[in-house]
Image: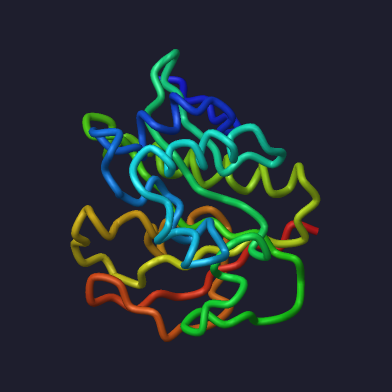
Length: 191
């Protein structure tokens, strides 16, 4: 298996990994953290969510990266400048400084491809996208699960050990908790 990670500029591939099964569904579509305004996130219903993602896929930088096994899309990582996300004003995950850092907040591997190390490729691709766009540093807010099992619906945040294996170090504790596990702010300097 040769995994290739590319910028998420193909809407149909993003939809295949994080889109709803029904076009009228009001599921995340990985927009809840990407949109700065919770009002906009709540207002986007059904097909409007997909239309917003299509728009984001046409922007530079795109909304994230996708992992491919040959022609098949097998994973997604959301990554973008923190200033363009809800993390810009998140009260539970505070800023450690004023750098114009990027945030990676969602890593998703499609069923049937989990346990193959694809999340490692996705995180590396997110780092590369941030670096290619001049980011001074990149942050993630994974779960500090200390090896305990995580419910798959909350695994999107990643784990502290995944980020550590990618060279990130803990920069701060947060007041955020997912699935009963504290989230930590992990950072990688790109300068």
